[in-house]
Amino acid sequence: MSDDRHDRPTPTHGAGDVSLPEGLIPAVLDLVDTGPVQLGAYTIAELTAVDAIVDFLEARPSDEVLAEAVRSLAARQLLLAGSTTEQIQVRGDLGIAVAFQRRARKVLDARTTGTEPGEPWRILVLPQPQPERVCLMVRIDALGVHELGLYKLDEALRMLVDWLPRGSFADPDEEVDVDAVLAAAERSALLTVTQYTAQGSAEVAGASTDLVLARGGGRVHVLTRDAGDGRRLVPSRTDGKDGVHGRLVDLLG
Image 1 (cartoon, rainbow, N blue to C red):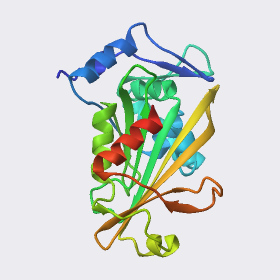
Image 2 (cartoon, one colour):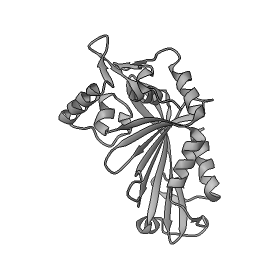
Image 3 (tube, helix red, strand yellow):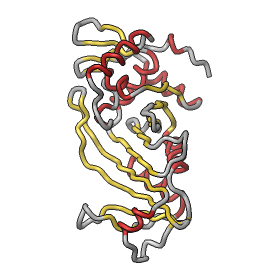
Image 4 (cartoon, rainbow, N blue to C red):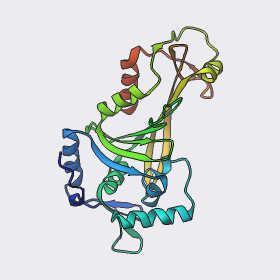
């Protein structure tokens, strides 16, 4: 696949609006049909500077760090002044990432413990509107580098499931001490699917659903929020690896 990045369209981002060149979205979706479209790797500060996935990040960088990020993006010609003082142009692959993030209305936020060197510790999946089966995936490593890409949704979920704790599933009817299971887990993951709406450039979180996987002693415990008490986690039934994949498809549907 040709990767002529400098010839890609330039989304304009500013003051709560994103104006897109005509044909940008269909053209990129056609590219994803041929395979994943990698959009580069960025720091938290660089993403914050262009207001990308800011509402899903842990903390806002300092003004000094943000200023350095702006200079870095400008030096790489990924950030230009807009037509007014309140607008900036986000160019290239980063601009495409901003455009697709703004179109999403759900996010799957997966965090795991017990990762190996070179693995991400957190993955975000932002599905695009139906009937498109495409998503923006963000993989975050221990150094805070955010690797962005566009994938077919089923492919992204398969990658995600392969990264989650694996093993034979524990019997959900077995009585267990959930706190002890989590404390002793050699690898665990918290997956949260959140619906959100956009108000200007900000994402406003709505309803969310949690799923917890904890592996210990060769078995994986699947836990969900108690319907009667959202503060408690209780065992849940999931049939095999495909069951986790299917549940995530349902949550993102």
